[in-house]
Structure formats: C-alpha cells, structure tokens
Image: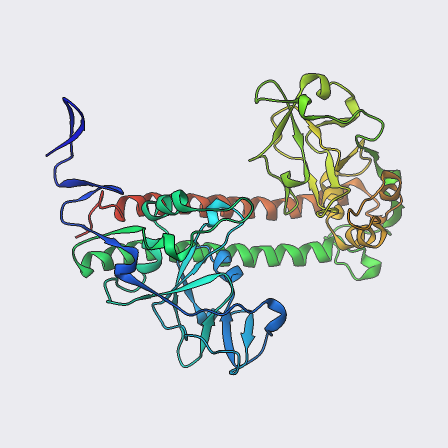
Length: 441
C-alpha cells in the first residue's frame, strides 16, 4: 500500500496499517467520532462553599480528577465534597462513566479523564468544571474508557483544539470532533486494559508504600527534632541538655539586599551563565532543577555571598510560598539566587540537621507569626536571624539525627525513582497498545 505525498512521490506504509487523520493504525481498527461513543450528561456547578464534607449525595469535584494519578478511580476510596438530595438535580454517576475536566491550569492536565467504579448503592453527581461521559452504545469495555481518552493519540487532538491563556480547556462543541481509534474486538480492548491496569496496580502500590514511608519519616522528625525536655525521643548513647539559641548565632544569612537586582537583560541562554534558584525550585523541602533561569556570568560573580553551593540552606522570604526551605544537595552547576530567596551559610552545626529544623514547626511557626506585608508577605533577614531553636549539645548527636533522617529520605527517593520508571513504562505501553503498534490478541 502506498500513500501519495507530493506529485511524483510516495511513501510505503507498513504492512497491515492504514493512514488516517490521526495517524497510522492497523487496517482492522476503526476510527470513531467522540460522539459516536460518548454522550454528555448533566453536571452541577456548585462552588466549594455550597458543598459540605458530610451529606447525602457525593459531588465529584474537578480537583479530585486532577489529583488522580491514573485513568480509573474507585469511589469506595472516598471523596471530599457532598450535597443534599435537594441539590442533586443532575444525572447520577454510574459505574463505567468517565468524568473529564473541562479546565486546567496547564496543558498536561488538559481534559484529564477518569473512569469511575465503586458506585454501589450510593449516589454521586459530577461537579463544577467537569463533563460526565457515558458509553452510550457499550462500544468500550470497563477500564478501557479512561485509558483511551488519556491516550497520546487523543491528547494530541485535544491540544490542537485547546483554548485559553491561563486556564486551558476544550469545549463540548470541539470535543465531538475528536476521533478515537478502536481495535476490532472487545476481547482486544480487554487485553489492553488488563495489561495497563496491572502496571497501574504496581504504581498504586508504590504510591501507598511512599505514603507510609513519608508518615514514618514525619513521626521520626517529630521525635528526633524535638528537644528531650519537651517530649522528644533521643537516639541511644547521647545525653546532655539541648541548647537554646537563635539562627543568627548558628549561621550567616545572605540575600540580594545590598546587591544590585537583575533585569531581563541579565537573563541568558543555557550555557551562557549560572542558574538562579527561585521559590519554584524548592519542592517538598528539596531542590528541583527541572525549570531554571540563567543569569549572566557578570551577575553570578557580583558577590561571593550569593553564590550557592551544596549544603547551603535556602529559605523563601517573600511571596505566596514564603517559608519554603531546602538544603542544597546534588548541585552540579554554578548557581546564584532569586531576590525572593535568602541563603544560610557558614553554618556552625550540622548543615543537614539545620536543614531539617528549618522545615520543622519550631521554625515554621515563627515564620508564620512574624511575616508581614499585606498582599505580599515578607520576612527580613534580621527577623530570620532572631528565630529560636534547640540544638543537641554535641556534633556527634547532630550527625546521628541527620544521618537517620537522610537514610529515610534516600529510601523515599529510591521509591520515587522506581515509581517514575514504571510511569514511563506505562506511557510507552499506552503508546504501543492504544495505537495498535503492539497487539496482544
């Protein structure tokens, strides 16, 4: 079989495949319009203020859909919002229905879809910013509906139809133009759904294990970072009173105060300057460098105090995420900091121990009670230097606490890496199985 491209030119298609408007699919697969398969059913538009956490009818909020990591959700796991029977004048959700969001703050979450199960004898309606989709002709098997709507071949069509600048979405009138490729038999759909669901189950088990390990770590932090005389638990082999001090006595705090700020003209391309660390690079107490801005070498060399090195401690001093902290680890590039961030250097105790303390309530509570500034909350470096904390009397005990918590973090990082690996495997499997490149039957 040949496909005409230009006058006098042609390409040969792989055996057993045909060219369609959404790309190559097997010859025995069919292309269906969205509205050939799904019907749109009524959904509510209640705000959070109009719902409660305990009532008669569950209301599936679009935030729940965005937060689900895969393509299925069992309602037996619970939801957050409920409405009264009087408010529930909308179509009730059934097992096998798909709830699709109609708004997303990023393109990654564009029209995210989740297939629902576990309705049982309970009643649920679909909430604000959602579409309630039903397989009106039973053309799809259970667990396949959510998968195919989140497939790359469907997502790419959604991206072409998306509108918006800060919030993105695809309207009903546009969604009906989406085309969905389907294998010729329900048996093949079921085989695909089973294979991908097995990977989802593995990812879900890793999520559960990660959540358990995080809870254990939080308990350990509560015990090990709280002074013994205030109820903390001590590691074996240590004694002596913990010492009360302030941050200014333990380190020196630097920021861009006193140094010239930077403008758009100081921002350069990768390789032409140093990275600048901003609040967005601090995630859950760790430094994440997936998105960075580069400043000219002149700005980097401006002052040694605002050059960032491993074992420095960062603190966001202003903005909506003030108080976020991170110990700098694994930094392999030359770096400086954003004006919203200050850095703790010349630390006189174990850096890792102090890094954990910075994210602990003894410091965070002082941050929250000290911050000033109306619409833009701000901390001064002088205020930060006065924060009180307790420190073990010996460096050996500080080292032991830091090592114990670091081992837990390392285990969490390994589990997160393993989960990410399986997520990549799943995406590759979806691309192969939902386009017919690999056949299971």
